[in-house]
Length: 366
Image (cartoon, rainbow, N blue to C red; front, side):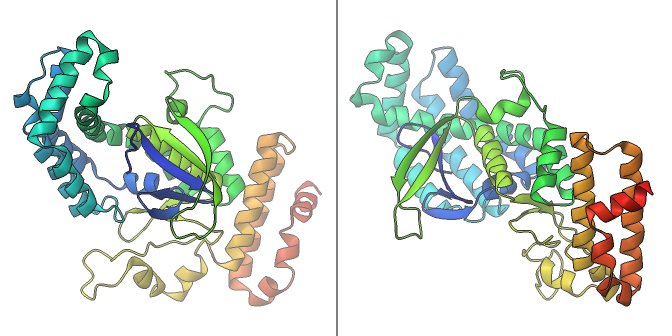
């Protein structure tokens, strides 16, 4: 991620895209990638980051010295190597960040950081002067990296049940909204104790005119600044969701990937684990038998069915449809889908008309 000069994590949003460090991706990509970092990797990161935690403890006790800081640069490099090995954020410029760590964690900058910490304990205003800017920057990078393992664990614990519900939904924009409303409080109070609002705490927002990477003209961009990784991951996931981008779990490799359009893409484009020919999960998925493909969520007959089920759910939630009638409509819709799959004449004939909301409602109440 990019750490701005003001010591904040910063992302730029424009339409349905997010930009960081000169890279533009569909919004939601960063939060989705964070879901794939395994618990074992997070635990390994916690062990690697112990020297960083020691620095935080020393600062709190006002006992920071050069011996505390000496191993921290190597710890951060090990974290970067681990994330790259696990392909945690595949488009992150790891070479750039390894180079920047070596530039930041020099003996001179570490001495400057110790001086800054000691002066800040007694006179913060003087410590913010220019002579300590490099030491301050070093400690900022260190503190962000120190929080990464715990923030990843917190993010996964809080969001995995929610994205699993998205995965199992009918995967339309209104269905995403319904799942969100069911998982989070519909009218939450703004408080530090409410985890559903965590992505909004200590986040600042500004609008500016700039050129996004890969574009030629100026755009009005929403720039968001975060003081924690967990806030950034949550916010990016929700920004993507608001424009119809949602995580989905690949049934072949088990990794989460981002879907960005109305098609119910079932398989990711990553290399399938253990495949001797090095084929992608999508290639293997396309080799599945015709019967399985016909029941896939993006089959035209299933799309009609999913859309109708989603409408029934929305009407039910709004209170314009009662439970009993909704259940009858769902049962009728399922029967019509099964008939359409086995009866081509019906599928090409009256199936779509009979699946209209008004037609189903009339049949269910007659």
